[in-house]
Amino acid sequence: MGKNVLKFEHVWFRYGEDLPWVLQDVSFEISRSEWVAVIGHNGSGKSTIAKLMNGLLFPQKGKILINGLEINEETIWDIRKQVGMVFQNPDNQFVGTTVRDDVAFGLENRGIPREEMIKRLKDSLAAVRMEGYELHEPHRLSGGQKQRVAIAGVLAVSPQIIILDEATAMLDPNGRKEIIETVKTVKEQDDVSLVTITHDLNEVTLADRVLVMNEGKVWMEASPKDIFAKRDELKEIGLDIPFVTKLAAELTDRDVILDSEPLNHDELLEELWRFHLNR
Amino acid sequence: MNNAFIIGQYVPGESIVHRLDPRTKMIIIFLFVIVVFFANSVWSYGLLTVFSLLCALTTRIHFSYILKGLTPVWFLIVFTLLLHLIVTKEGDVLFRVFSYPIYSGAVAQGAAISLRFFLLIMVTSLLTLTTTPIEITDAIESLLQPLKKVKFPVHELALMMSISLRFIPTLMQETEKISKAQASRGVDFRTGTAKERIQAVVPLLVPLFISAFKRAEELAMAMEARGYQGGEGRTKLRELKTGRLDISVYALFAVVVILLFIIRD
Image 1 (tube, rainbow over the protein chains, first blue to last red):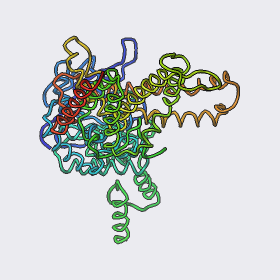
Image 2: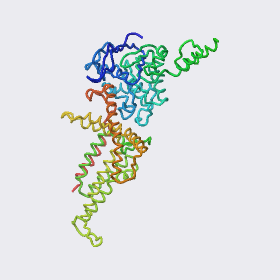
Image 3: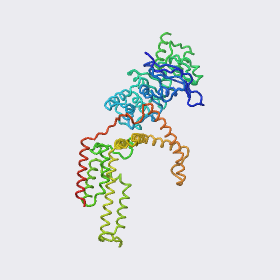
């Protein structure tokens, strides 16, 4: 895992002088190649965190460091080379008239020479399995495909951190699956840190670490397993737990004691077999 | 929604005209528009007609399709001709229609003006038929480059055009969605007096505008997040190249212009 690439140091943020604090004394770190999920109900400040990471907003108090470099007006363009961001609405982040133009947008902004651009374009479209769609216009793509193009656009500039700000929220279950699969493979191939800001609990189970936000504060920071073990507390702050975890809990109540908390269907099945054999 | 939705009237193809640098096409059309006004004899008109018809033929687009694109201006062409026949009183009386005299000069002048009109519209429509809107945008950006010296926002204009082009289908889909949503709430777009129908558009436009503003805001944020900081130091993926083909087309056009000035009266 190595050293941290992103660090929040006692960050306070509000949208206006007379408005309440959205983030209160938030501190955390993200290591190299780590996958961190940020969850929390609406208004918990999780989307604000994403925008702060990329210099779209600046904190009133505290510091945000990317690879030891503090985010401020002077450094944002360097920061944005290292931090890629995918937003929620697939349509409203598609800048180019075709897939190819859109993926190239970030490269064009950075003044990458054309030959290099073509090479990177090909590689990043291959990484999200969108080869052959180069000349498609956005209205001929599904939501999931558009989001994959957005990810390719981020990958093309080879950032160290990729933030998915509710990137799957507006997709149907199939599109959601596509994106999760894509992100998983990208994560395995490249040495990037991932921050997923999400409502989707299945996304959370894939993360190395989960940050639970509540009322502008880091409410808890732990592995997905430990987080879901606290289902009553989670319910109190308006969060639900995934179906598999719920089922496991119900089973426990009925004296089906599993060795470890399963996070997905496969693990649950495995645990059930083990339970069956041990009986 | 139709999958092959095409903005403008672009007809995909691989012809010589399609492959030309859009700048070449624009420059030649611009010059052609000027040159047409120098024609003043049967031969000079003949030459320009042959040239434009040759251009139309090389696009490999069905001629009837090109003519169909001119439908809205047919009326204007015919109207010009009729007006000349009635008003102009030069030359000899050729024949009479219901005892109204038609002069030879009227026929000649009417025909010349209508033909000039026809040639202008046809040649300019060849541009939009063989060039994608985005190519036209690129060409405009490149051709307006000198204006940068007088602080004219060339890059911004081109970006604005390309973003508009990209969002036309999106907003059209949205309009369709909103009109269905409003129709399901009882808004009637089809019947009623003109005033009622105009009023029915309001509940369509308001949500459309609100969402367009929201989109614009999110798009701006996404662009910024992807490192957009204006035209300075930006490279371009789409490249315009003036090749040998373009040079030969310029040469051909020069020959046509020289010939025209030789044979005109």
